[in-house]
Image 1 (cartoon, rainbow, N blue to C red):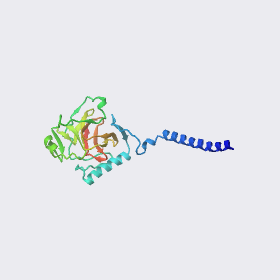
Image 2 (image 1 turned 45 degrees about the vertical axis):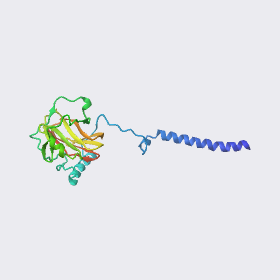
Image 3 (image 1 turned 90 degrees about the horizontal axis):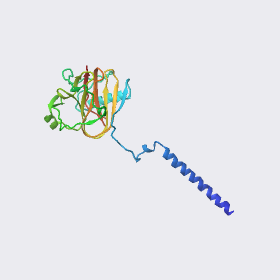
Image 4 (image 1 turned 180 degrees about the vertical axis):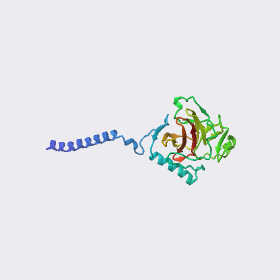
Length: 239
C-alpha cells in the first residue's frame, strides 16, 4: 500500500516536469520571441541602403504622394508645391536648364555607393545654398537656417541647388541636412514612372551626402523622409 501511494505521487510529478520541459523548448524555438517588448535587440547602422523598386502604382507610390501632399497642406517644410502625376513628374521653382550639376564620370569607391556619408560642412562649405526662393551665400544661409527640418540639395555650378542637369553616366553629390536621429528613407522617381526606395536605417543629425548616378536619361525626382517627415524634393534632368 505504501509503494502504491509513492507511485501515485511520483507519476504526476514526472508529468508536470515533462510539460515544463516542452514549454521551455517551445519558447527557445519560437522565432517571434525577440519581437516582444523587452526582448534584447541590437540596432546597427547598415553599411548600404536597402533598395526596393516598384514599377506600378502601389504602396510606395501612395506613401510618397501622401508625403508630398502633406508637406504642402500643412506648410511644415516651407517648400514649394510638388504636383506629382502618375508618371512621377513634379514642378519646381528652380529651372535645371541653366544650372549644371557638379559631376564626375569616375565612379566613387563601391564602399561609398548607396551609402549615407557624413559631410564636413565646416571644412568644405558650399559657395551658396538655395533657400527661401533664392541662392544665399553660405555665411548668410548658416545664420538664418533653422535646422529643424530635413532639407535636400544637389551640388551644382550655382551651389547647393534644388534642380540641375547632368549628362548620362555622371556621378553627383546629393547633399542633405538631417535635423534629428530617426529612420531615413529616400525616394527616387524615374522618368518611366518607377520608384526606387532606399532605406538607410537610423540616421544621426547633421549634414550628409549620397552619390547619385545619372543612369537613365530624363527627369529624376528625389526626396527623403526622416521619421516620415519629408524634405523638399530636388529635380535632376539627365541628358
